[in-house]
Image (cartoon, rainbow over all chains, first blue to last red):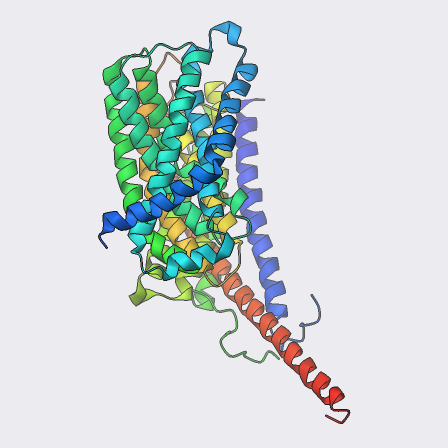
Amino acid sequence: MTDAGYVIAGWLLTGVVLGGYTATLALRLRRARKSLPGSGGETSR
Amino acid sequence: MSLWREVWLVAGKDLRIEARSRVVLYQILPFGALVLLLFAFALDPSRGLLPRVAPGLFWIAVLLAALLAVSRAFAIEQQNDARDGLRMSGLDSSALFLGKFTAIALELLVLEVFLGVGVAVLYDVEVGSVAVLVLSALAATSGVAATGTLYGVLAAGLRVRETLVPVLLLPVVAPVMLGATRAWEAGLGGVASDGWPWVGLLALFAALYTGMGMLAFGPLLEES
Amino acid sequence: MRRATPGVADGPALLNGTLSIVLGWTALAALITLAILGLWVAPPDAVQGDAQRLMYVHVPAAWLAYLAFGVTALASVLYLWRRTRSPVWDRVAGASAELGVIFTGLCLVLGSMWGRPVWGTWWEWEARLVSTAVLFFLYVGYLALRRIPGPGRAKRCAIAALIAFVDVPIVHFSVEWWRTLHQQATVFNPDLNPEIHGTMAFTLVFGVLAFTLLYVFLLDRRYTLETLEEGREERELEQAIAERTGTAELVDAGARGGSL
């Protein structure tokens, strides 16, 4: 693999990891908010 | 009661339990020796590698044995609500810490003597500076015992303590592993004077973690 | 419409809602800018060539790895100190640690990916990498401890964080000493932190800033999640207890052979 290959792979990995984590957080937050009482989501777990 | 009497009370209790149950002697020591043996299988003795890696292998064996010793030290407090007993004993929590620490350290030192002989015999090493070897071992053992006692009490009431303590303890004592191995490399046929700075580092680590242990043992025992 | 639950505001967070949103988008913009700077605008290194561009993500990740741990340690101190004791600090400590382990892992992998073209190996027993590897395991231990529930969790974790944090400089120093003493003839010449100037230096600093912005944003979000989940645990517990006591009343009435 050329140098450029490592560079692209590294940056892509960074994007995937950070973006993926941010997305996971957003999902977990949405699920947590839904289970708040009065938000109508208590049974949907 | 003075602090030292309290320390000796606690340490004495643990050592008496060991004297009667002989767990360190008949279970942990053989384990350490087996580790040394298995390393020889893993590394092919005929290549002349063993004398060079002996210091490191020795300290790994000691570290692994220490995990068991720490586990044992707090396992004995599991039964009969012994931890409640410690809490209500009125003993100073620093004394409790130092007592358990002393017992573990002494047990480890005994282990090290036996394993050290084992290494000298099995791995064919030459002894250079006994002073470096002994002082670094004392400092390293103190560091491991202090940190082990600290994490031992932290995990004492937890069901997962047997798998938790190793993953907490080993990274923290990495510098001890480093320093002790370098000191023993110097003391076993290396340049002895190279070892002294490492002895200093080991002593610093031991002092620091003993101090922290004395402070944190009480609060951790409360929560356990 | 959502009713406010006592004790749990809508998205209890560290930052004001608007600020958080602005921060998030700013962080994203900064990271995109970093990519443009690092992959295009900045010149290739004289010695390392294009591989050096990995430094623009590796170094910021390293910075955050240590910053996050510092935040965990500081929050732990604030939790343990009676005058400032508050569940806020416990949550901050936990949230920062989760972020920290991600940045540390990323730092290690990126360091390895940089090392392959530059050193020819995937790993070198070089002081900074080894110290960061130990840091990774310190984090892992803390997070394992954090997963154990119970009333004493906050105090346990806070003390554990401090025990580990105190170790970090010792690890760093001893590993550095070890590797400088053992500087055998290696192919390994290019330093992980060469002297750099101009656009490259600017990009590096910008990268650190961009990552820090992202960290603060994520810390706020993770903190919010922690608060919400704690609240849910509490409500689940209360509900279980209520169900228990409700059933007990029914049983009593039944035993008396009568009505409720």
